[in-house]
Length: 211
Length: 249
Image (cartoon, chains in turn green, yellow):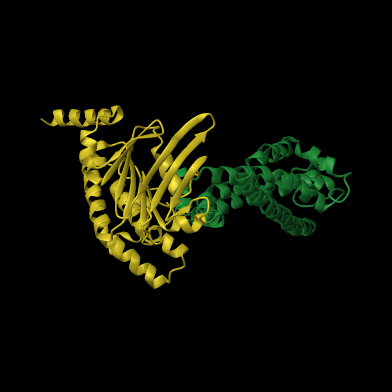
């Protein structure tokens, strides 16, 4: 009995630590992805000729199987190698497309009559963006962030394959030792985080959406 | 006195198609010129040339004696009220924020904006206490269009541009708004340019009527001249007057 307690408390402690690590991986990746994809998405609404190339790149990134993408990054200088930073690079590449596409769609689907009114009222380009386009696109942009976040929480479990840590550590260990308890120790918290993130971001979406 | 708006041999080409062909006319301060024409006659294009939403491919459009290509377009647009069909109100702004937009962009003190919004809402028959904090989706079509007119008048621009402003309304509401427009225009002494395909609206609101057909100005004159004119396109518009009249009898 005593031995079992000792083991389960050690397991509980490890679950806690790896969950934090998982949240860190996802949080940082999403932050970087949003900081890249939202401004680039806005730029694409102003420079239509770039759209095909940038969306094409993001599309290709999405189609590479995730385990392979992590593998491809290992031999690369700066971005690659073994460890967390490589995992974060891969997760960012995955998260770009939904955010980019939703930013673009959100802004382009603003009613042309509303946009025309804004210009005719004498708004500058910047005022049009901040006062009309972004507020009206908020809901769509946040929906993109939500999709990207939920996907990233799942994909981040693969980060353990290249030494990135996170809840995937349990899953790979459980796979290697055919231990269902370990598999569940990784999969259940990851699923719970995903559900919580989905609900939380849905709530933010409704709170921030102006219309 | 130089005309408020002046078109000199203005043409607009879109690809191979001439939208406007060699258009010349003046608008004097205080008058309401109605541009009447079928869909695709170029009337909206002509209107958008006045606040620089479009620029001529040949010829020149001048406002207050200055070519639109020489104006700072932001400054020009804030001096011109603009009303479009379905109003184009900002759905995420309250009625008060919609009406107070241009004064706010112009940096008016808050207290002045509030006072201006209140006075305009009273004039368009939507009392502030009841309507100021509503969003456009909480208004009827007629109320939205009233707000659109108030928003255009907010910074007291000398010139108003209206593109089929009452086109999407039911007939009763349309007549109410047309009369509200006449009252406001006469009281505030605004110059207005209104685009429509409705000949009755043209006769009711216009001090002068210009008829556009395939990008050309085929008639320009007062109401009685319009009713007497023999030009083919003008007669086409006469026909729809007669038909409506026959129906009423």
